[in-house]
Length: 116
Picture 1 (tube, rainbow, N blue to C red):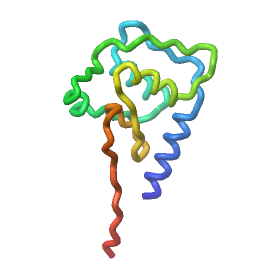
Picture 2: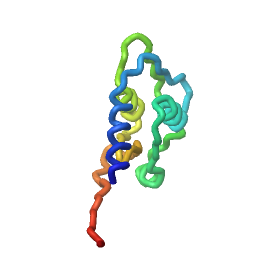
Picture 3: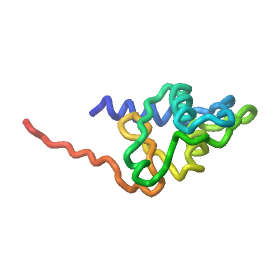
């Protein structure tokens, strides 16, 4: 459980880090943009494919172009910019970025049981 807390704290720190040079070229799919983003901040990213399909949301369509060059912006803000045009959002769980729908209210419930 301590590892999960450390991983979550590390991910929060990565998302709060400013990025001053990040761009998504016109015609780049959202899937590729998200992959590039995760690679850039050295984070794991999981896409809830089934939930996106249920809501007829495709991440294989072109993402709106983004160009951040002069002003440092947090990685969290860049991720929000990437997702906002597709009605998507993200959550963080156990040090992993989970891309999901904006309306998704589900969450991960962790229950600890003493089995000694």
